[in-house]
Length: 473
Image (tube, rainbow, N blue to C red; front, side, top):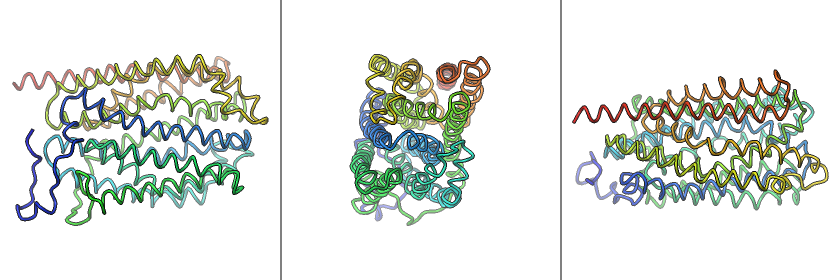
């Protein structure tokens, strides 16, 4: 492999150029090896985050069902920031990896700075309105009597919005250069610190549900400081982030937004879909159904961690292969990622189905929530059926994001969320009168249909690229 192209004059090279990192070498090498080596640290990082989410839910559950429901109502709004950060991150990771694959280091660094500045601008625009109108938003979302509690939790989280966006985009820069180990270290540190602070602030300090939010913000800010240390003080990353010599470039912005904006909208769709599902659950079964759904969904997200890690890594692997015009590697990476994801998901599904009653106890250990245990166990068994169908769809969306076709990914997600999931949830939950259980089965069936469409679409797209490559040779 040749060294990345560098437009800097020879005299400037000793100051700015660092050796090719191991991560970049892996990223641009064999796709299967890249997926395995780069996704394992991502799995570990996300595992830490998910374990924290479970621990957080367990601590909040001790405050009663109202607290659980309050978190459930504000979670979709919080997902807006997570979605914007992850969406922009997908765009940054895609552009960075494609430019690294095309041996353009300076272009990759410019894309990284563009992404960080976009994230800061978005945070400045959204934070104040959400903090000021947290309670009216909770009322609109159907929180009812728990709206003040939901607003108390939400306001604190929204204050940390700019740090959330910065961290997610910084993670994307590291992934784009094949450095998933640092992402693992940062996310693990955040999760451990958060888990330690939760019981201290919720119970010992007596802050209640506000304590959970404060713990989250403190851990997020701490990670921001660690990331800034890596990039600005230690300076041993492959790419640099600096305003020195930075020139705004509309083409780079469009390239990032071409993936990042659709990806962000996809996360907004997920948040909107969660809001719709919460509203339908309140209609058919009351606010307790939201607590059941929120608790069970947290565990599902825990089980999907390996798939998310593989899919996130796949964006960079696909981007590097696409940038190098190695279209045959797209087929290899896509197929391998799906097989690996299904194998892991099948084991997760079996475990959840068998041990659902025992798992449900984690969310219902207090006297005030014990009556929810059978419903949570039932939800877990139904939703476990979905796990083995997730990898084909999730990995296929990564193909489009990695190649810069973010709009295609968005169209597929709109079909999944609106044409499949929302319709199935309304059909089974309300029209056919199956209530809460009908909503669960609607979620499963709608997602399966969406996953099938994504897979078929991705295979057709990859085959077309390979045909173009063969015709060119």
